[in-house]
Image (cartoon, rainbow, N blue to C red; front, side):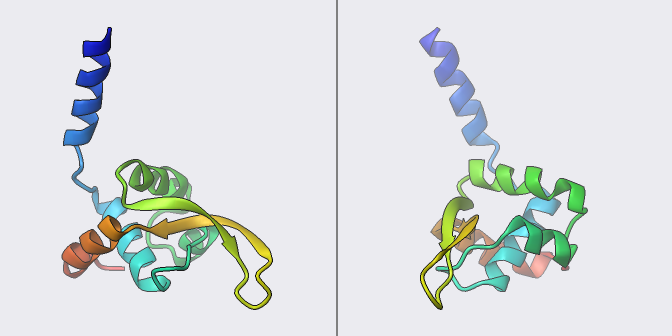
Length: 105
């Protein structure tokens, strides 16, 4: 049983290539907000970088690949909680820099 779990984990780890939609969302998030700020899914939907119905699936896929991570967001003006959004990780920023010339937003 343990071998099956290890094998499944290895298979997931090998498929780190980003789809066109993932690249567009990642580059948008990378360019839209400073590194310490998160991006709400609603902002991605409104920017129309991909079809609004696919935003949640694509962002969660980026999170599974380590490109973004879920973060509780606060309002910098008064430090109150403002909800949750996704922050681009260091790996995500590096990948976005690498692919940004391939992407049209």
